[in-house]
Image (cartoon, rainbow, N blue to C red; front, side, top):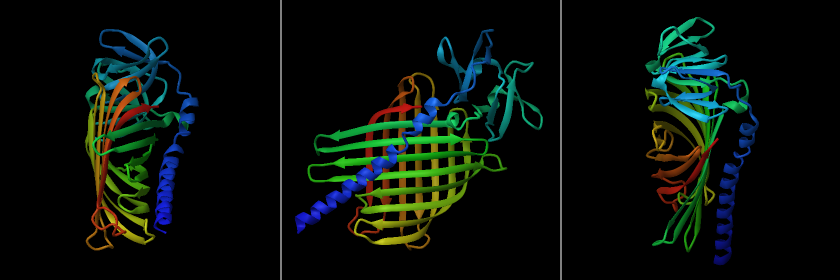
Length: 359
């Protein structure tokens, strides 16, 4: 009988492993959308202070560099401080250091180092130092999608533990909001057992009338064998604010409330309400080697289960080795001081490294 129960539990674990992998894998067909999507024609003109003029397609201005796709040189990255003027026939979203956002067209200014921006209300002029981001507002949905996938692996010889992880991150930004989908599926193998965890979150940040403020709505799915969690579904919303938002880093924090339904591997079910306190920090460096650091942490004090506190955190370091190919180092942790199943651990974590590809 014990052997039959062990076989059943192993099958259930493998089922959850497959479910997590399937959820992540379902995101990959979105790549087909981005592959066939066509961006605008290469007619944008960048003029440098030394008099050079480069014609191409503006992909983005972010983190102090403007990315320009050209026919003869491929994609070139130009230091924003070296640009004298920008001329384009297409529409863009312009974001300033104070959090202001504008949508319209850019054109050369009569003064070097100043960008002229015309929206439906009036023509505005901004100095280069004020501009944090310039992003093309594409007409097609596929052109607005950014995708990053990575496959990571870790092995510890002394303990005989291997860990395999698959991640997929998708973002879509329009004039009103930033929409993101983040997913992770992790499988850990030892000589005695196989455990798995998976997590999928979907969020939307909509800009408010107040500068640097945003409204957020979100939902998610999570499972974790170490925490004896069969599944957890969440949905919630709240407010957040960017405290730092420059061309090389940003810091944001939010307060929200969420409802959740969860079930343990033993079959116990529970519904509750939680508060959400979240903090996120990102920093970029475009000098060689290009680096991207992301840190996120959240606390979930329960509003209906007295004394219960959950937390999770994520860290990722991405280092570009060649165009769009990254070395990826990621770590995550999950904590629950009162797991729904008494047999579950209070803390689970993982560290993996591998390769990632940006689309």
